[in-house]
Length: 254
Image (cartoon, rainbow, N blue to C red; front, side):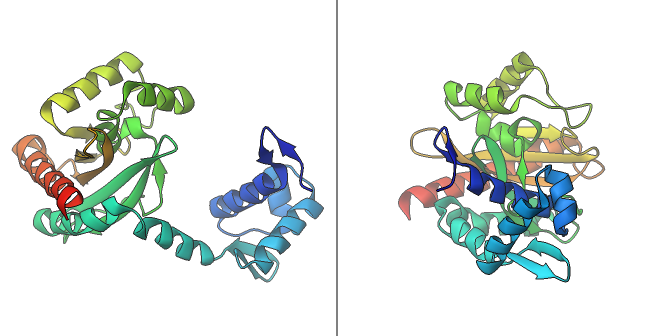
């Protein structure tokens, strides 16, 4: 039987570390993975072989990569999310109407997870993709969610993940974050002015459930050169708030 510590299965955690390392490296052989993870090559091989036999990794010559079976699992998880099913059309509409990048993000385990993205005709290419995880404090989407979560949940998130800086504009002080979240609650939308990626601005509105807590957020992102003046402070905020409102109503009554 696999060793257990604090209710966790050590062998399973090792397999997950192997998978995370493969994701980070793209593809790798046994020796490279053993060095990356600082565990014996024989252990790495055993886990890789088990994962390969169960079709979770693919072997190409002497290298391994994450298999597409995870795509099926990810699609299954996403398709079971009510907010994705309802908000998807609103994200598509925002992208088409603004010409920019529109996004849907949810909170899971204290981080933000991009669930869906739609690209408008002039949308810039950034590093985000469906499934990508980000810290909540440095994005408009994340701040929109944090502003409408119970205080004790926000405390737990900040205690676990901290407030790491991504750019010189990132909020890294808890008091400053609390002031920002209060402002988000008052105006109904959040803004990100180069706080995660320099030169990128984003405006997001929370999708609030019947209990008053955020179940996700919807946003539009674009370069600072286009997201300025009234577009950044009035036009895009109005559009994302409308999209969030429609999503909330459809989630409640459809």
